[in-house]
Image (cartoon, rainbow, N blue to C red; front, side):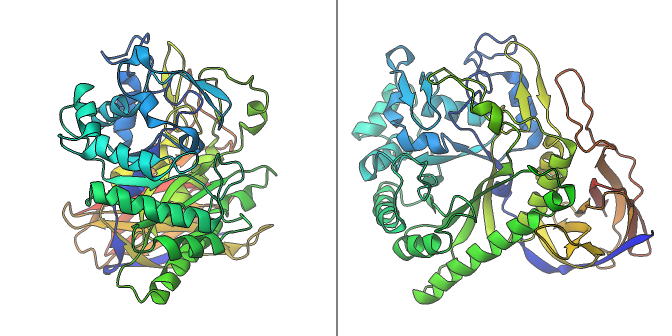
Amino acid sequence: MNLKAKMTVDKEYKIGKIDERIYGSFIEHLGRAVYEGIYEPDHPSADEQGFRQDVIEMVRELKVPLVRYPGGNFVSGYNWEDGVGPVAERPRRLDLAWRTTETNHIGTNEFMDWAKKIDAEVNMAVNLGTRGIDAARNLVEYCNHTSGSYWSDLRISHGYKDPHKIKTWCLGNEMDGPWQIGHKTADEYGRLAAETAKAMRWVDPSIELVACGSSNRRMPTFAEWEATVLDHTYDHVDYISLHTYYGNRDNDLGNYLAQSLDMDQFIYSVISIADYMKAKKRSKKTINLSFDEWNVWFHSNEADNKIEPWAVAPPQLEDIYTFEDALLVGSMLISMLKRADRVKVACLAQLVNVIAPIMTEKGGEAWKQPIFYPYMHASVFGRGVALHSIVSSPKYDSKDFTDVPYLDTVVVHDEETETATIFAVNRHQTETLYLECDVRSLEGYKVVEHLVLENDDVKATNQVTRDNVVPHRNGTAKEDGGTVTAALSKLSWNVIRLAK
């Protein structure tokens, strides 16, 4: 079989400018994400604040621009005041979301310090589960007001003279979910979110706000939830959130790799709902999307059922990712880039130890999971403008999807640096896919690198002692007369970089 795919790219056909925050991530007070993840004061690499510098270096490799914090389900029972002031005076609390004990050694100020070390902004979530307007406006005042008020002066007394100037804020987390502390109906949440947003903006008019969308597309309230919430909040927020996780529970690879089509549909649906609400309100404002939780998550589900309650930072949600997971993560990144005109913020959930690209051993090494690489490649090389491509690819059908293209691809062009990148996944399980790409509009551009992530064992994993899944630079892509040709090996993630 000689599988061929064709695509045509024109630099004038722009989807939209890519907001770098699309490559954001997420740290929740959950499992070993904070304690033994980013923070381990006894570790040989720990800095003066107890943060692991080996982890900081890996996060910097990913060029993470934004980190959502402190949750997640955790935030819906969190009193932010517990995490500021002298550490010795901070209370230990039962975290009902994950049935663990929170020591509050790390809180708002320490996390802001860590974010500076990785050159990232923070996407701060407020508790709209057990709390509401008052705690949220006070947190904005504590973080963003200069001085001369109770909460800003309290921050100064805690050793932080300059305000943190946090720009992006989440109005709660997954409030549609019955598992959420303080779960609400769409009307209850929409009213609370609107009033909280108003008060937060009165403290600091410069902030951007994210309203909670559905926890996933399969929720029985999906679509109706978004419409109702936006009916209440449209004038007061900038983004509606999306969350989704996928897993290969049935060990059906063709169906698993097609799940990014579900993500596509989710994105298109939420855009449609937001634009319906724009029409209903006769508004000039466009609501964009914050895909603030996305990843593969299923490997650890069974192990997590056996954890003893009320431990401090037990190993939770520690998925060990396989090569096939890296392929789907690559396709999920492509899905978001294909709607870069509307998906402006996204957070890979999560960053360290908890469903994460980076894992750590207590007292030992940090190491990279297979999903680290597509995430890094997209973040590093996927800056600029996403382009519309005309793609012709052979297709297949799977259990849940029809007409799944073997070629999943998007092209990014950066005029400033005069570079372009083709991201491509070959979903075919046995055959090489021969790609022919018309790039005549990118005059004078030549292939400078073709990175490939591939492995004959789809279940291959990385361990602290051995990296089995790592990219190589031996891809075959070349440019001749305005045409890029490349042999995309079976089941591969490809990054074809061009420069003038």
